[in-house]
Amino acid sequence: MISILIGNDTYAIEREVENFKTQTHPLWRDFNIHRFDASSLDAALSAAASVPFGGGSKLIVVENCDFKQFGETGLELLQILPQLPATTHLVFTAAVVDKRLKVVKYLLQFGKLKEFTLIPPWRTDLIESAIAATAKQMNLSIARDAVSYLAVAIGNDSARRVSELEKLAIYAAGDRITKEAAKILVPATTANCFQLAEALLKGQAVAAIKVLDELLSRAEFPLAIIATLQTQFKTWLWVKATLNSGQQRSDSEIASMCGISNPKRLYFLKQEIKEVSANSLSRSLSILFDLEIALKTRDKPDSMLPAFLRITQLTHLN
Image (tube, rainbow, N blue to C red; front, side, top):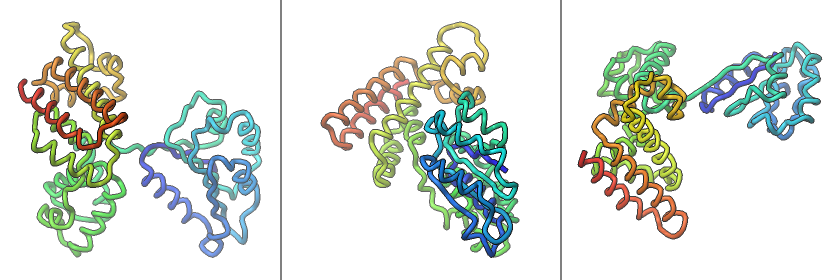
């Protein structure tokens, strides 16, 4: 069997690999599970071509693939796939996959593709659904307001979702998990760049300062913060400009023009920029680009706060 696991939810991918491990014989597991980096494809395929030690099946995991690095040489090596023993489970993991590549097309002839994508942080409705579903799988009884609180506190971190629910399960000892219990055991310390962008957009200076302090205290890279903010403000500006054009367009058309992969996200974007002018968004984006240059040349992260306060003043005036 051949599996191709792709996506940015690395925790979910690892859980899938762990599930594959349980399908190997427990007495011979240490001898029949092997992990290779994508740069060692030849060694991985050699291991995959051999029969398992002892009994049961063998699991071979090839990690960190982008498939481009395999090239023609890799494609030649992969010609062995039809001859692999039925006892071998060969797994490829990757962040993304380009189905146009020859190597990928060949792999898909023999393998099953499975995607593991993190829920967008702005889709709190989907995050709540995921928390409720995970709790159900764990046979936990949890109050609806507790789920809503956890969605804010945990965000789209799938690994933390499981660990926090496990902790709450021990605390509840079979009883219903309440919002009060969730607040005690799961502090809402998941400030992220999207929360910062939202605070800047709404002109909420105090909230922006608080989120920025938390991000920097967690050693978040300043330029990474700025890059995320630039992307978010560019998206807001493009949507606003498109809506202001006066032309009637469907959400799918607007999403395509603005580089938004999921048209359903457009509903939320429209609500967010409803009271903000295109001029404010444009000037805010200019401040962010100036800040990026300053950080790359001479300034320290301390220069971020004055720039952000200027943005909140712009958006607050709308």
